[in-house]
Amino acid sequence: MLRKGMVYRTVARAVLLLAVIAGGLAMAASTTVSAIETEMGDMTPTVQPHQFQRIEQPLSNKIAVTLAGVGLIGLELWWFLFSKPKARSVSTTESIQEITIVVDGGYEPSQIVVQAGKAVRLNFYRKDPNSCLEEVRFPDLQIAQQLPLNQITPIEFTPNQPGRYEFTCGMNMFRGVVEVQAADQRIKPEASFLPLA
Image 1 (cartoon, one colour):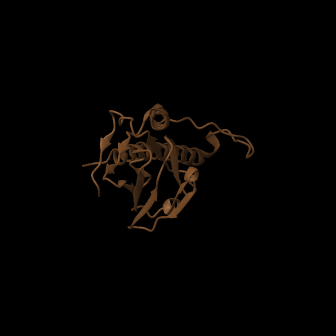
Image 2 (tube, helix red, strand yellow):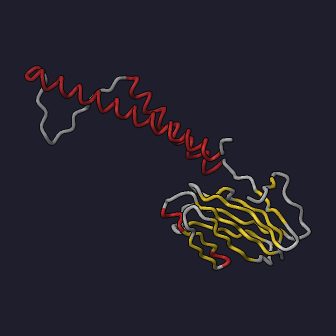
Image 3 (cartoon, one colour):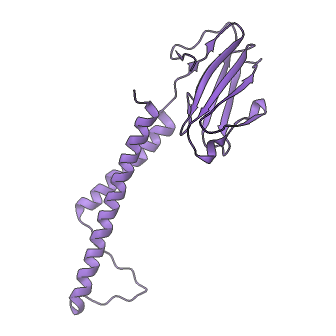
């Protein structure tokens, strides 16, 4: 089963590859035009070294570069404005609420729902060797923990107040949130339950 994040990364990489190919084609066309102009010698007007010379590109190159740029802008806008992670609630026993968070190009799941007043154990399993993800920080809870590669690192705390507690990587680039709900509050309908890993 493909993960949602992996599909999005694959699409983003494909669009980026198309943009690079279109840029390469434009550069190759520019080089070819320059080579032809050099071979023609006296037939082309001389251009001073400090002046810019306009190089006309084929319409297909212009369209390809424009479409790739618009596609990348659209993907960025969708990623930051419209893609909302679904909340996942933890598995609960009598004494502790527990979930495993896979650290691989971010946090999966990145939004966790727990009940207030009950101990929480977040098991961080780091698969990504990126140095940015070597540490996880919970600023509001004053927790900072190193995450060894290919190991499960448990972080335990007991949230007493409902609210949103953000966690980030060491460089504050990747983010997640623990949403603490009052004990009598029901889990949101979009939440899905995960088994213990």
